Image (cartoon, rainbow, N blue to C red):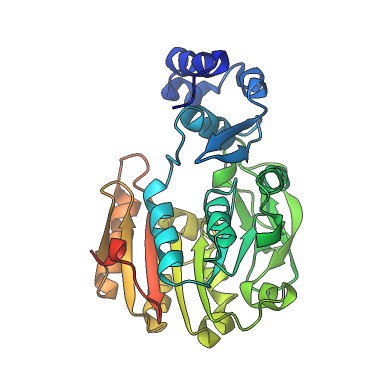
Length: 325
């Protein structure tokens, strides 16, 4: 076990002096100076992850992970994502809404080991994308990953408006409208390139990819992502997709969550399952009624972090034991 440095002890003390509820309500005082002591980065599974000290998502990642040595947030989902890559070798790993790169960097390790054919990471936030780029470069992953600073849209090479969340980058949203209504708690929007997976794969020399394992977390724009990869999913030998189901975010962008569920069943996939991050189990969803109940539960809950969940779908690929069990 690595010896704890003075900065490690300061970080542990800081987290005790300023507990999470205080930081969530009032911010994290002096966090910039503390992060600077560690070079604005943490090491997770021997991976250097660079973070933006002005972003609450990043400061919380820093404080949670600085002394952990492993992924804490979404660790269960990440482990299943990697299990799918290892069960279906030579797939293309796709991370739509990459943020600081938990899935991207984990997939790059698999690519370096020869298990994954290539990695694609798409992130619209320019500050977060810069940190992700630094992480990729520092870890020597540039040969394995295509980094794309863009937002996911319904149509390829369109103009989108990106709304950085005032505090948490992970809660930012994108609108394809040229004059979108203002989002609550979002400010200072700027224009970004809108892309689709159908359009990106040929650009990156990956047209005709046989199998894909995809993660989507784009705060309510997931239906746009599916619309923009229809041709890819139809032509692939097989695919698996992990995505966030946040009914409130879907509604805020004008999407009907139940209609979205109907589209998933219409794909004719082999498996649709909930990935329950709290119980750390997968639960098969057999029909649209079960999907509707899941939506209703997210919309009516009063418990923090339970207003969304994660969904897994698979078609034509091997479902690993970790999910089947």
